[in-house]
Length: 232
Image (tube, rainbow, N blue to C red):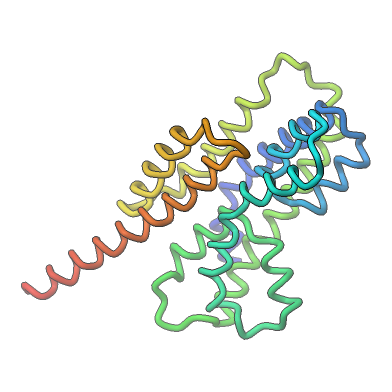
């Protein structure tokens, strides 16, 4: 499947990030059973890593849920962008697709079909499934391995840094063209400046700013291409 073929490289980084997340859950005091349950039900590494220190500090449940929602607000944007491609499917089918969406799959899908003349085709569905299903499997397998092997990993290994390296390994191969570069630069600057904001709101702001910058850059490139074609 083409989707699996294109996602195979990021899968290594996704597995690394999942392994680190699994270790982080047991290191913060969760039982192995609860950590596995969180892995299967949440399927959101950023939300899990955001919730863990709050849970360890005894924060109220509503605050933990709010923080997780803020960190994952980007999936609202992803869902809105993907809605035209999958709107013809039943509600439960769209719910399953929505649950399995990942950052990597969204970026690769939009890069390939974002400007497609015909949308909502069966080929597009299978391409997307070819990415999101393997991502889900790899994430859960590696996270569960992290849960049960976490006790064997020394505390001094610097797992946070390993998670950062895994994220970089996911993002860097996806940066192609000026719009993606602009998106990454703007998101990076906003995320750095937003570190002082509570509930990791800086991350949400970075996602929104990056999407807006990427769209604006894409429109600028398209206008330039149109003007160039007009001169010919």
